[in-house]
Image 1: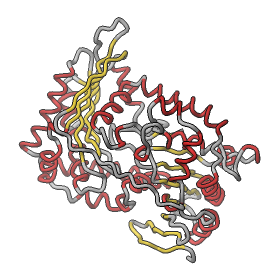
Image 2 (image 1 turned 180 degrees about the vertical axis):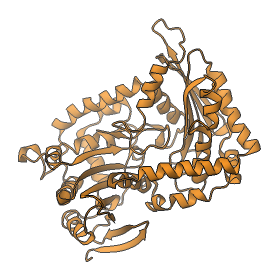
Image 3 (image 1 turned 45 degrees about the horizontal axis):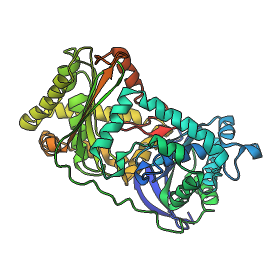
Image 4 (image 1 turned 90 degrees about the vertical axis):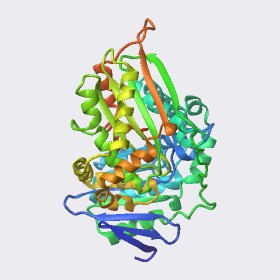
Length: 464
């Protein structure tokens, strides 16, 4: 179509580039139901923030629902109200490498959603009168996280493992930055990153490609590319030269052990073997840590995850302890589990079972237009959307030798960060584990308002 260059096709998804402003467009027709999902992914997240304005991406996410030049409550067509009135399900999420805004709606209203997303891309109002009340909302989110043992431990593991790289700070930011950042600073951040050439528009569902492209051209084509190059995040993490440890002592009932090891960037070939390793260690009742910890009554749950981020990641094992179970004992079992794989490897049957489980999970996660768009959103954040379409092929190529090799490569003591959450009852004495608190911590995982498409227990994306 005039105004677009077709770049490539993979897995039934077509990639286009708008010639006037560099906007990337991903389209996949699916006429099985009269619904469509539009998602706009901006390549900006907490990775692009620094001291003084940590949490800026998430706070901006809130403000961008408060109105744009065309769509606002003064014009009686506020974004949230207008979209809900036409039956749309809407939200946005922020994470380390990206921010996404989306609508899933009857396909007859797709043009309206495209028009709204295009308008707030460059015409968001970002008023100080809106920032002040939204700041208190975000601060409340921060404080809820601080009151959750798992959230607290997870945030501190990342802050301890990464010292120079901005993965050091969590997506929601530090409290003083949330409270202190000015509207002018947020607007400068918006004017730096929210441009067509730093965004991907994904449309999945019931539409005609030519029609969708014409709408995207009409609305998004009104914006030029950014006047200045999008700033590159060039900070890298120095080599870690020894294990790091910390203990958090805070009111609570559940003891938690977290053991993390540095892993490579999301597009690295070893990520597929790391996914298989994580599954063998911590997924399902046949996993190593379920049998060693849960079956033996030492933990109520255990999980292992290594999400593919744009830059380096962490493979983290979390164990939620039962009452009176010693942290040191559980930590030793985790490290022994690693050591057995490093020394003796895994079986072909274990690899095949992990591959089958992961493939089934991936298939389930791709059911429906929103699910596909959401998974693509995470692949876009790694820097290559075809990570989504080629993932299973790479996964199936993993061998037992690969799993042992990557365990020997990455599960090294000098690359580790270990954190304990030691609960303190009101009298200040150390407490034990508790099933109720563990259930609460687990409930904060996939499916909640601030968690979309998570793969294991890792740093969390934040939403409205």
